[in-house]
Length: 256
Image 1 (tube, rainbow, N blue to C red):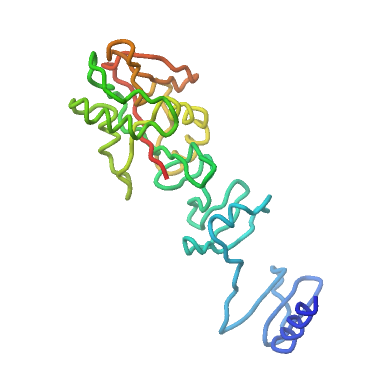
Image 2 (spheres, rainbow, N blue to C red):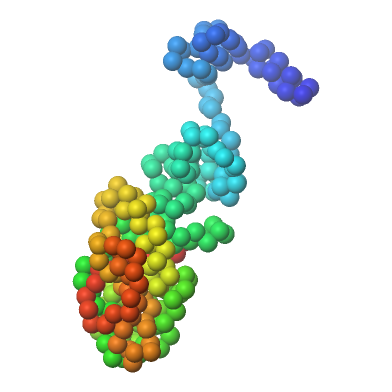
């Protein structure tokens, strides 16, 4: 308390501190605060210094008020809480949250440790086949979140057909990112569960909403002699094993 009083005394001795019912002014000429401001700080040689925090410290703030502002020392950018999540002044996410535009796409999964998955804002194809009908792709059967990347690599190595869903995702470059892949069965389902939030952000960033159609996952259904793979209908969420030669839309994802 003594230190706070001393600081206040120093401020009062070195600057003009004007308190009125309309607002507070801190300046050198004794003028009152501007009529539109609750706090008016005037200086020709110094600036305003907001709280400085890392991304992790910002994320740990409990129940932030809308409009709360900080400076992110991890990314060297000012940020504020917009009522939904922490964002920078260009609208991109400071701390990732479901539906945020972040790391080249739209966040649809968070792992609880600062990482997660984003999907592209647009479909990479409206009618790509899974590929290699009748041929089992060794290793490309992982349904789990976290399995899509390896599934995609296995498909690209084991199926040499061009224009297939996994290869389209593997080869695409979006912005500065070139590490996209075809989502696994469970990753695709996480996208469906957050479809509304993804659609809103995707459209706002020049992309498109999901079609009311099946989308391919990278998870092969190996018990049918390499004839089927898992897909999901984005109209109602139904997941189905469908022949790999059929053309369905494809949406690439990447991890961060």
